[in-house]
Length: 395
Ligand SMILES: Cc1cc2nc3c(=O)[nH]c(=O)nc-3n(C[C@H](O)[C@H](O)[C@H](O)COP(=O)(O)OP(=O)(O)OC[C@H]3O[C@@H](n4cnc5c(N)ncnc54)[C@H](O)[C@@H]3O)c2cc1C
Image 1 (spheres, rainbow, N blue to C red):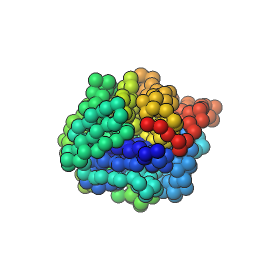
Image 2: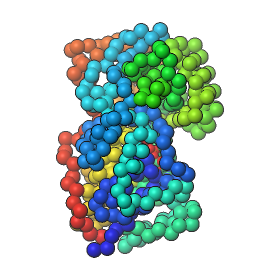
Image 3: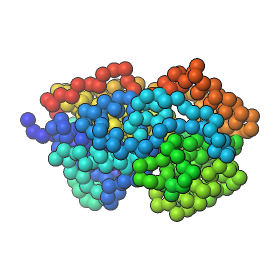
Image 4: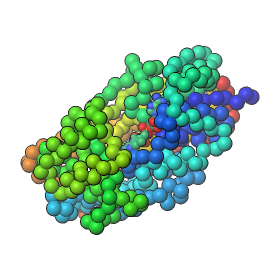
């Protein structure tokens, strides 16, 4: 039997998981990454639900756990930092997950564990694709011509290859919330908990510990920051956060000097199909759930395993891709379809809305409702067993 060749675009969580599992099931794998080198940045992501099992099967559970951010819990605070409510400890999938890590650490751990036979090409992107019945021909901006049996697009929410090949199927749903993340110096007032401040005008401030001796900060507010560069976005955040109190000014001042500021206008990607011919999508490129839904890194991790399992089974590639999509879709739908009131509730505009939100925080974290609240953080958990991984395959 000849070795099948897969081209994967994007070397982050979804692309590296796909590369890992496809290689494990016998494929030759070429990964094309647009960045000139491995992208190490990013703030907190967590590995939850079925993704914990995928990580275990990769043999990486302990390696990821060792890089835990050291966060011990989650509290809601007021403008003076006083704790108003504390989220219940929901076990390994609680608000602070057992596997709470930095995105770059998770990606680097998978990168280091890739089996021999995975080639990573940095600084190149897809420029054209011809999807034929027997092969997919991929040309790249740097002039490569690759022939493959499968093309996996794992380029994240703003994937250009997805738009080139599936543009007619992409629905972008702007959630009307912008976030700016960055790493700032730790001060003595910081502790080991995720501290979460919500105030009027649809504004939040978050501070979380990491295991590098710094603090991970995030500002999140309602509005449209789409397309703004770093300097303009930070200026807009400064205007919006004037007089907000708590640690907002410290965060904004530190963001001016931070190297890794990352601005995101939360946009869900929804598509009626994630595959066509010999091409498929994985991770945020297919179904970006945004931090509002949570579980984006977990779904990305799971998708690599399910894709490899589905295409390892002895059947035509197209049938394998259909099986991959069928397995992933309920998991993704579960995260994406949160109720429409969630954004206005989480980001109150008025004093009255803020009072309601704080009252609800207290009710939902009370001893009576804490078990129910703890379950709300359980995403990316399937009641179904992961599909079996066969090593036999057909073209
Ligand atoms: C540098 C970085 C920082 C992040 N920080 C955070 C964060 O702080 N908080 C958070 O919730 N989420 C963050 N994310 C997003 C988070 O990683 C994803 O939501 C989730 O893990 C799903 O991963 P993914 O692999 O599908 O997509 P992504 O993690 O977005 O990765 C996509 C990869 O594809 C590459 N790429 C893009 N276009 C092309 C192309 N045309 N050809 C080849 N390669 C391409 C990108 O460089 C990137 O490496 C970050 C992502 C990156 C890349």
